[in-house]
Length: 79
Image 1 (cartoon, rainbow, N blue to C red):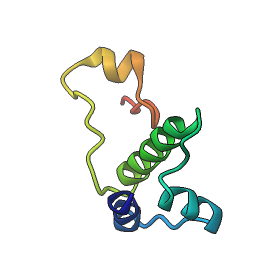
Image 2: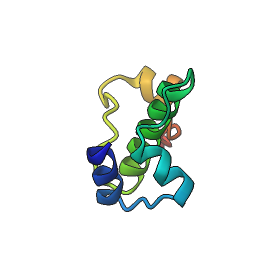
Image 3: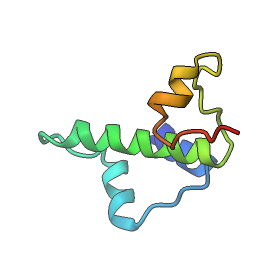
């Protein structure tokens, strides 16, 4: 979890104290713990893309991807 917290800091994300505590504790051992982790990693990934820390990664040479499917952060506009 230390690396996850460091990554959040790198992309400029701060956590409310309750969320910070759950991250520090490794989320939970319950049935939702893995979902909480996955959601946090996905959220940090989206923030990193929006802030320009990492590239979005879509294949730019596949028109179906950008014109039909779109991406999680929204379809790219076409001129």
